[in-house]
Length: 386
Image (cartoon, rainbow, N blue to C red; front, side, top):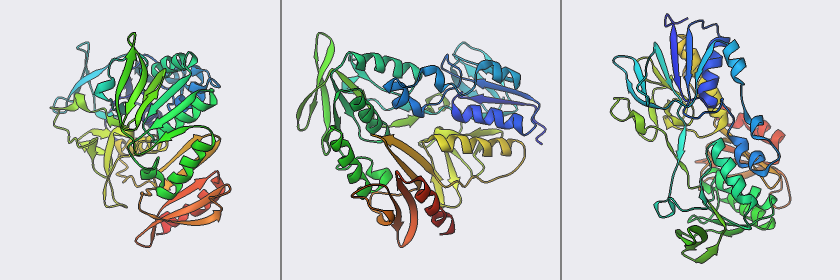
């Protein structure tokens, strides 16, 4: 075990919480402090765009660990506290209220901030969805809306569109790319996803740029696009996210679309990163990787905890994420890309569940399961055996 006696974790979401609890499970008896910018206890984000927005889950069901449970584990939580600077020489993190927190080891798990479109900033009726407070505002807005425009056809945008239809709204998705989620699913499966949305009444405007809002009485009433106006009572901007690293500028830590780490998730002596904000060297892929998904947040946190305790363990996961849309669960292992060849191994993409292997250069690089969890798990070994 490391001789260090105190670990400070900045970021109280899935990765930060998992790091703290993993340290305790592994027998770490020193001080563990968890600093979170939001006022809520650690909560799960994947249900926000689905169950919570739809109303089938109360927001309280997303809580990952009640404060009393964390206290029992000896994990000190500082909610509603924003970190503004880190001094790696003095081993101190400064909070917005001027408090300075020392550390033996520091874990950075600050996650993401949504990308914004300047033309839509400050317009009433325009939303982003990242936090629990965001979903509360959006849910209230959709309760009074009839027409929803979603700008962005990535995972989040497609999930919000599906939820909007389930709420009975007229939904239009606007995206400049020709195929939704092609960068995550490949073009073939992306086209199948587009067909699924259209089958459920979503209007898909692909190859279309959202240019500006139209307002009346200070509220959005439509979106001007390259194909004409799209009427909307509510608009969601879902055009991706950025690693939350602005506060680390000037710290000397390496930043490049995330906090750059070695294979042990270490950014500097006694400084680690975990979750969406971490870009680390993946020995198996021979490049740096940054993953934005719930599974990685939990798995990477375990590797960080191990390394703090002296394990010297390289983090080499098989990337995995899933999405639920219109009653279909799509699971993706590995790293498929738009240009990969898809080889169907089970089922029929035209009529129902299927499993497909994405191949690049004759080598499997991804597995996609369309309502086919067993098939996807069976095919997953192709990625580790390649």
